[in-house]
Image (cartoon, rainbow, N blue to C red; front, side, top):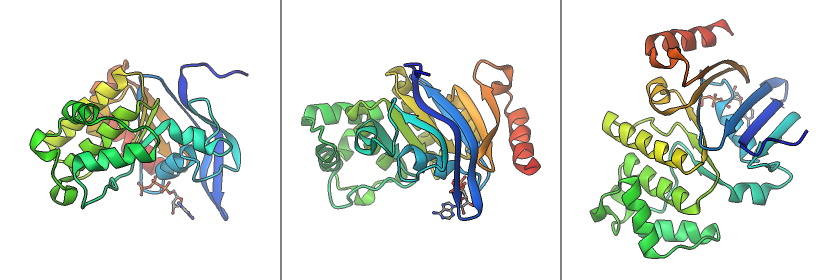
Length: 244
Ligand SMILES: Nc1ncnc2c1ncn2[C@@H]1O[C@H](COP(=O)(O)OP(=O)(O)OP(=O)(O)O)[C@@H](O)[C@H]1O
């Protein structure tokens, strides 16, 4: 069946085992354009493996995976061109300035941009002007993420994957980051955010999915009343994890 054009990320019936250990077990998940999906789950539930599958680093034993309409294993290069990925600890070059980092990363991905565009994206990402020409050595995690997300904005990719983006951020930096994500969504990007941060998920996500033992056991949509009931969601999250 042809895929709806709006599905930027789609996994259906995805299973993956490491030896005898089934890590993903019939996983189904869909993120449309202009949507933020928060994937929550306990340790070892399969969140990072889901990202690895979308990045084409892990090949499922069964099921279908599409990123911007492409199979990330069969069309690895083309699929990665369409993805921006922020790992939990963003890897940047310490001895290069913020601008040099952006310049280099954009050149690597074959999408060089002039300085004016880079500083424009830094401004949009909330990186203070005095940091633009500083080496990254002294940057906080929040500042590094701003550099990385500015690069993602400049690449104008349709899919953004985030692994624990707010872990280790203070509340102000978390709020800034969530605001930035909302701006990314406005551009029509599909955002999949792996997180343990239920508060951020409630703040910014359109849909929250709870994964356990490699499958989605519960999903809550933003338009539902429960979205605003943090306590109920917290209990549900704890129960989902405990019940498995
Ligand atoms: N390369 C691998 N080889 C063998 N087992 C693996 C491999 N990668 C992950 N696993 C196992 O798969 C399971 C799911 O791991 P995954 O990293 O996806 O969980 P997670 O939900 O991201 O957990 P956490 O919240 O702790 O980061 C874990 O039991 C892990 O030990």
